[in-house]
Image (cartoon, rainbow, N blue to C red; front, side, top):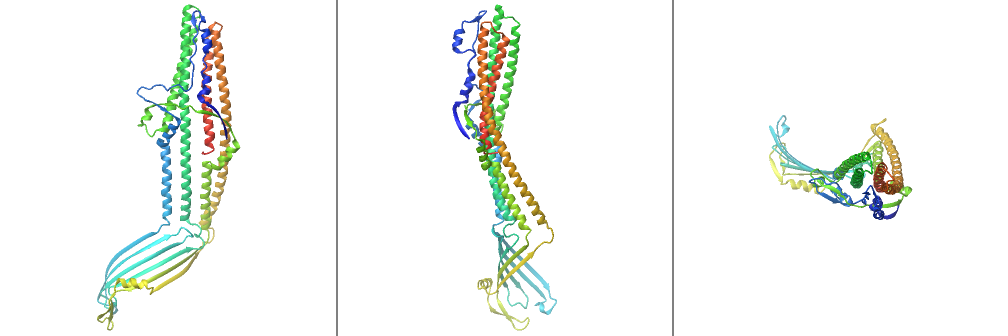
Length: 538
């Protein structure tokens, strides 16, 4: 989009609205012109931008620029505060997905005291009592690549007994084992845990995009509400000046009635105009109240905010930028960078992950498992003369000796195995995969629909900039013509060549033209902002 700065403030453009009903030079020339001794009054010069909001008893007036309003909305707006929580919530979701690949440490301890009546000479006594202490630890971890899982277990037992046949008492046994499992088909390239992690990372980007969209939309709403508030204040000033002029005309004509130059029935028309003007002014004040409430809703976080009870005076004078709209270029930029198309592309990635997961799940399951274990034994070693003979201590030993046996790799055990499984017929996994394929096709169609919506929205916004500019030019010409017409009619009226009805009609036409130009100016400013917005966000 190319921009040719007109270097004209909107209020400078609207200054044309401020042409007096009778120019200063003409007012000087006609100051002596009278009808029945009554001097024709000139209208005050109307300059848009100087109007102040109506005073509210007990309310402080706060001057506010557009930049200050946007900064306040970014800090106070409740919708933005709510949207800022979504990325934080997604961070915890992502942490939960990452937790699946962190090691898990387990520990255990138990004590068991058991007694058993003898039923055989080989039981080692008439009543055997054993005291067993068991403790150990284990750790397992799922690996974030290739679907592997590694674990180790370390277990220990201390057994003290009065069994006459025991050769170690108390006896210590320790076992240390390592195990690794690796899927070779299903679950090797992707599984539910890795899919959840990758999906969570993409969702985190989507929440950032959503937050940016929310912030930009609120900024745009603040901008629109700011100019709507300024427009409502100016509308009050326009209606007030129109009403003042009607009242002055009524007073002048009342004097003319008294001197007999104007019929008394002519005052009825002026009284009706004053009544209509009062109603229009009241309607403008009601519209201002509503516009101010709508604006405050965007920049406060509660009704307890002092800003909510203040009277807001928007002070900015926006610059009109005459733009040569490049719609094809704007469409290309929007499709490349707009937030909704980026969100759609990210969702496509999520659908691709889901499709890959469903495809992987229909593959046969073939798993490789390997393990390596070491064991050690310790405890005082006794020898007995014959079965159940007296115990003679041969070697003192303890728990450390059991650990030392593990360290010396005296009793290794290793194992390798394969596990295979495949469901027969149309399994649930196959049905889910077919559904995922259809869902992926839907996503591609939705992406195309999003591109079409973007092109339509950007094109419409570009055309709106062009049309609102033409409407602004037409409104300016209409207002200028209305001022010239009223000026000429007042001159005719001052010499008795016009009627009150004609003057009243032209005054109403000028008021309408001023309102129309003011509305057209605001629409053009908003159209430019909207054209810029739809290229970046939805």
